[in-house]
Image (cartoon, rainbow, N blue to C red; front, side, top):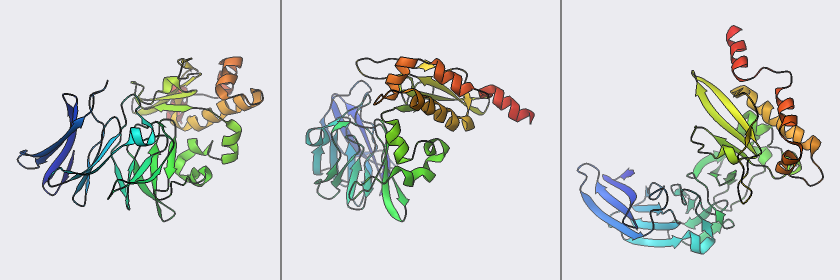
Length: 309
């Protein structure tokens, strides 16, 4: 929910309709509601908080129904169907993420790498190619004195210029990505690696779908210490498979080197134009496992070493 000017704005789903509601923030008394047809879906309802600014309310439904409503009356100023207009497709949880206002634009995490509309008229400013949308709200931040937008898309982190949708070179983001990102954030190395999916989950419910990543990482907390379980060989699609656990878990500061060693084994063993998953299927788990654990303590053993030191 969002609160502005003494009013509370929220969105839900009732009887096959999304319902945007405005209530008095103190008494809870309904002021207005705006409804439109939308199935509840397998995980019921929309997954986007209304964004309120300058007397307007911006909302997003699970199938890509974008609205700009008058904050006082609930009457639509404009509306846009991101699915029909731009080919935005819902993921497992629908098209999600709260609208982000940046300058004259309202940005949605829809399509492969976002959609931006005029916040005043709903006209298209730019749109990435159609496809499955991400599961996170766009986030604005400052980079080199300019406003940029970060999007967790369905398969990557995208950094966008909200005006022109330009993608900065990944090497320019190396300092922002931390040690794990720095292992792969060189553009030449990325081109050499080719197609590879790293999926990371921060909970046992596999919220990041780590189990179907080519490289999967599951983070867990044990006795106030972080450990990471690594799986290899997972994939989605018609030939979907769960990844295989490579071995005992790793401490947090080991993970950049673990990923680097996995990638090195792939590059040294792949055939021409072979993707990571193809190389893994051909040579199996053992070459990766042997290299990762070669000459090193890991996980609990390393944590015990640190405590003893």
